[in-house]
Amino acid sequence: MAQENLTTKVTEFVLLGLSQNPKWNFILFLIFLTIYVTTWLGNLTIIFTVISTHQLHTPMYFLLANLAALDISDSTVTALKLLAGLLSHPNTISYDWCIAQIFFFHVTGASVDFLLTVMAVDRYLAIYKPLQYLIIMNQGVCIRLIAAVWLGGFVHSIVQIGILIQLPFCGPNILDNFYCDIPQVVKLACTDTYITELLMVSNSGLIVAAMFFVLLVSYSVILVKIRTHITEGKHKALSTCTAHMVVLSLNFGPGIFIYDRPFKVFPGDKIVQVMYTLITPMLNPMIFTLRNTEMKNAMRKLKRKIVSSRSRIFARKNPLSLDFTEK
Image 1 (cartoon, rainbow, N blue to C red):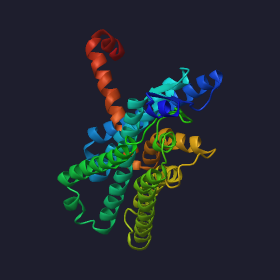
Image 2: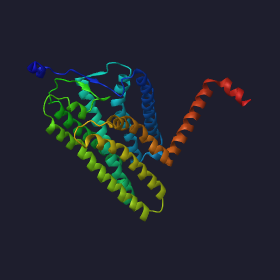
Image 3: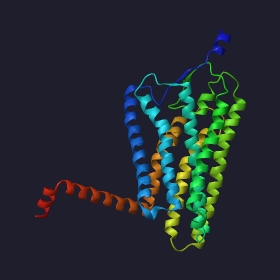
């Protein structure tokens, strides 16, 4: 029996999800569907506003639009399976789809972290090199940086997957989570995973912690520069850097909690994972748009422009209505 069990390959995993109560599952479905739709609307609004507003064709807003696109992608990787799982029982996922979900989750997640690093560099150059800023951060450089961000996310993820697929899985196949991720999946392997866990922590947790520390130091230096040397536009610069630091904490904090330790299960893991995968992508556009006067003004102008265009189109299609209102 032992030999037969070792040769049996797991073909699917069972996800326990967030709750086993059907009534709670329906309530959670409505809550997370609202969060997911809000994520799409908020981030698409940023992307569309940046594309449509000439004044926002700057490096900072170009990077912000790309962050919005990554937030949509990052949320979609986990949200769709979560929503489907809340309405189905049992909630299963095939081995291949589980590996694919881990791959795309780490591609988008790592890309977000790398992009936040690029955005910190962008703010540093804007404040410390204001005269050379637009020359350094020209369009070609920005496009290459975004390509490097995606490439970095791909390399990070493919290394994780390369290690993971070498592990044998012969049972059990129950994941106490609402999506597939490395900490839970590794624990189901039919072999000693100590070395594998160390490699995974080194590739995820330590890198995330180091990046977070460096970025916090960088923004602290920037804030000191703003407070002591900048007079014109100080409030705007402070507001932008503060928003960036809040987003950094929301992205890196949960990641450090999940990946920067041996793969053990803690009671608060699922709450942190919900924050990391669903809440943060929704909050990112709110933090930037609610604190950014330039973005809010651009959104208002774009809204008036759209309403005006629709009114003109309606008037052309309904000339009698136009004549009546004129009379």
